[in-house]
Image (cartoon, rainbow, N blue to C red; front, side, top):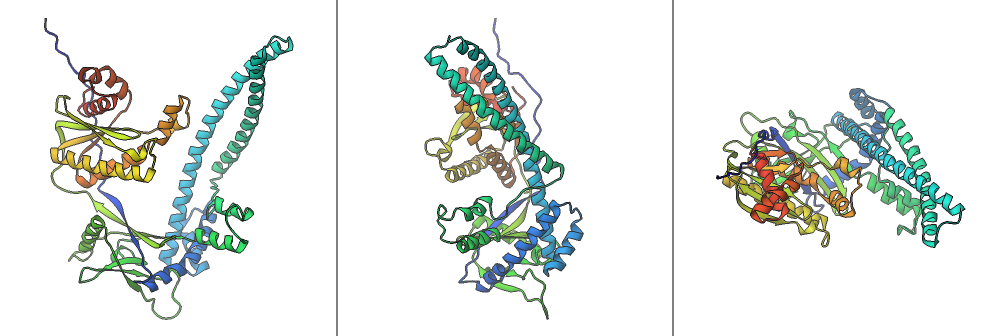
Length: 479
């Protein structure tokens, strides 16, 4: 009697719905030798912008909800342009909202931590009470007596810690109820450095103040508008007839007498993909029917100089896309590599491969190098999926809850906390968008365990390649 092995079926997961466009940042470094007037204009606006921004954030923190009224107040109080004041109010509102979300997440983590510590305290209390009775009767040997003393000490420290955490949670709960966000502009670390000058390599308080003010007043956000010149009237790029580029800026303050003059200066743009996107954007601006696109700008002051970030909208590419008719390509993301497995329409393995991420490994850990390796690997994988016409399938990775409840062994905890799953998922989504590759996101539950029981035994492959195979099969609706 012949027995044929069947693969269990499951509902085919839907294709991840890509947005109509994504925002691509283009960063340019301003050279003082090329555009000294532009750099001077920008540097002169940092202080007043920062002061107005802190005022706006403080008023939002105290309950100001009407952005229109807030914009008018800071515009009149500091003599700012209406577009500058509007940018400040919007950015301060967004930061306040982000602070509240972060506080809610931290409060939830703190509650989970307190539950674990109270459970541990109850276990310790029970053990200490049992040993105390034996100790009173002199029934403990030297090793048990030493353990009893350590447990008593741990129980006392745990009680002190729980009281501190309860006080902190009470304060955070009150802040959340009042929608109050605690934030130190210029970083709390640098603010506290004024009390420890020698330890931080500072000779005087004047030197500390100069460093703190420079760190605090180092950012400007200028909101774009689709009916303004080149998407932003305060700061925008200008394309010359010879193909070169200039940057044009307006002061953030209202002009005194006469017309406000735009200050321009040449800039160098060497990033090929960014330059291509920029040319497409300006082709739309300069068309017979100009395309309307808001270009928001963020200006940052760093050690090497001033940097300008333009946030451009990349529309979804048109034309041929991939499908899962001929099979899929599954990806299993791990701490030091990405496992790839290509399957046919029946879920059979065609080939498997590993992409090393040595920068994220435990031995040679270099986070920035590891992220660059990951980006390069994802670009290569997406190009391969595009060439073969097959959909990419990844897991829906989200360890935020597990990170707040680390109770397993040390190796598992280290893997969870060091896995850059957020950057990985976002990078895959953006790359699939750019290359017009369809993406499916499946449930990650028990992929490794099921792979170990099935494909790893059948084909003699390791557990990571087996998990990639199961992920690809789930993208086809096969278990």
